[in-house]
Length: 200
Image 1 (cartoon, rainbow, N blue to C red):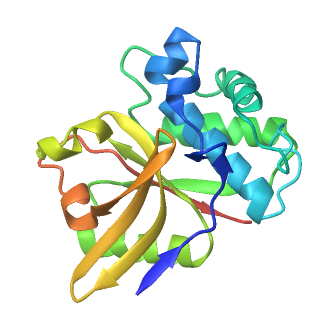
Image 2: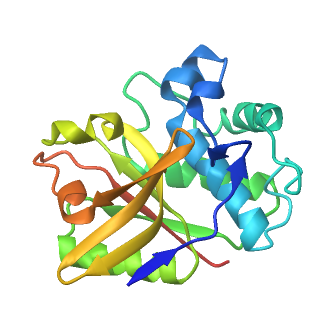
């Protein structure tokens, strides 16, 4: 069974693209801010969230996206160690939403130390409820996932067959289907995790 969210495109890109950003700090370390930007755009488009996206949702374009990233920057500002804890995202994006007058969207961190079976159920619940899932990857034993290391990205779908779950990982204006068991089992003690949205 496959379940995919209706997402958004900017030009020919699937979602936003960190490579567009001219601000050196954001270009290098703005992935958490962009996860929040992309979540805001998605909620404005598909959940009728008012006031949280400064862009024209009927005319999404690269220049407005770059400006939006700068608006989000103070809330999830790149830093030396990166935004390496779920609570930093929750606090930063939560403050942005409150400053925009939105008090309905809630979020909580779901630690990467949780069991894979429980994490899979959270993915099902979130996607089935129409929620994108910000995902924080720190280190990973699989070199094939090097582009996702120390990085925030979004999950926008899943597919299951037999005992396998594949998830649709979105970053840098494109997507890739990844095996969730492998994604979750990083091989390291220091783990990231997922952000679970609710209230919208």
